[in-house]
Amino acid sequence: MQRILMNIAGIRVHVESDWSELLAVLEKDFWSFHSRDFLDSSKADLSLKIYKTLQAPPLPEISTSMQSQNSLSYDVGHIRYNDYYGKAYTVINFQSESAAIYGLDLDKIHEIAYLLILSRVGKILDLKGLHKLHAFAVSFNNTAFVCMMPSKGGKSSLLSELLSDPRIKMLSDDIPLVDKQGRVYPFPLKLGFNEIPKNLKVFNPEENLYTMKRELYGEKKLICTRGIENKIEKKEYFEKVILVEGFRYNSESSCVLSSSWLQSFKGLLVHGVIGIGSPIVIEYFWETGIRDFIRKTWIFFKRLKAFFLLCFKAKKFKIHIGKDQHMLTRIVVELLEKETTIK
Image (cartoon, rainbow, N blue to C red; front, side, top):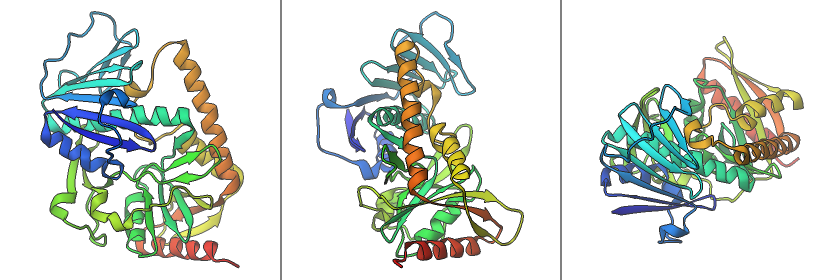
């Protein structure tokens, strides 16, 4: 069995499998979090074993606890069995934070493993006081620029154009972290695009360009952070934040407007406290029982406090996003230059 060791914002993850092709793509997904700090899986905060077979442990003969378009779930105590309609199976032990995945379809198992890791790590981070925000984030002049956008809002296009500026580095393509003091932390996973942008230079593309075929959302073209390592922000966290929410606007032109505290906090409620759009999967995150109900309630209030403080501290704006992508990039860079200049 081969293995990958990761340290994701202090959470130690151990992944083990004899499926080398699968481990190779997971390694690219989490390249910035590679670690050799521990070798024993018993010292991991999350352990995952992946088997290239459909011969999973028998499912319990009980009623489903959850059913979705994606899977059927069965709970026996602190263990959850997920049946992906015969295409794959997972067994998750919420008490020991360990899981096993069974399947033969590389694309399906890649998607399941990636989302399972993010979901379980996300819950552990929530309890530790580090919370995901569905947004992209870059750094400029010692300031974090955090931009919340709806799905299909043009996030990827704007991010790729901003990264072509040598002064700008990436904190996260999709989910930067926010702590209990409202500070923003990098969380550099792979970058995802419908088409690889021509303006973004990728080193060793044969090694660092790959794909993920998602069952419900189609194929996504990915860039391993190793391919743009010079564009990844290394600073631990940012106190200074420019917080922006983008809205589609039926016009060629784009414009930046000041945002009120209430307007910005409403966006943070959707994209952070509730977490709409974040890569969290309910069958990996949602547990049963009064103990976990209390934990989820505690997580809700911890998120509320963190994003309240972020909103209080940040400079707040909203962008009406027009059809001219280059104009949008230009006004964002002008905003960054103006708001980070020492007066």
